[in-house]
Length: 150
Ligand code: HEC
Image (tube, rainbow, N blue to C red; front, side):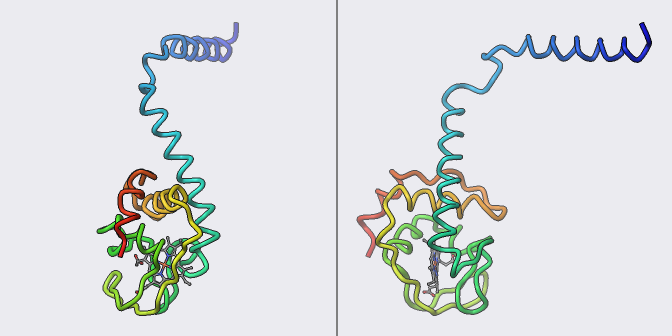
């Protein structure tokens, strides 16, 4: 056998051994796999909804639009009080706010057509994109805030 072939064979054998020894118990526990799938589902749906309902004003990459619409990417306003975003989406927002040191005062219209789950998916998307990673924002968490919005 040529030297090269021998080397190939031993690499194949090594890989097969490694694969055989990875029994299911070596993988992540069932619970966290399910949580990961749920996160992915929220994130993918959230992105779709974001592009339909929010990107017009806040930009495809959450970059905002000059002095008119504040950014969501790395927004200190958003990331320091994620819960409030439930109310901002559902009720809109008026009055001056400051985002990353810049003042904004155009009103944001309410999005009363978005359901609890959809709001959760959008928030999950915008708080886990553009270098943020806040984890899933569940529909249950939206529900807890939703009815107490002023
Ligand atoms: C018609 C344009 C418009 C649309 C559509 C819109 N927004 Fe806004 N949004 C604004 C403006 C303007 C403000 C600032 C409001 C103020 O100054 O009081 C704002 C503020 C915010 C803030 C708080 C400030 C910040 O930058 O962190 C969040 C969070 C937010 N919007 C999320 C969303 C999400 C999520 C959607 C989609 C469901 C959305 N917005 C759709 C215009 C818009």
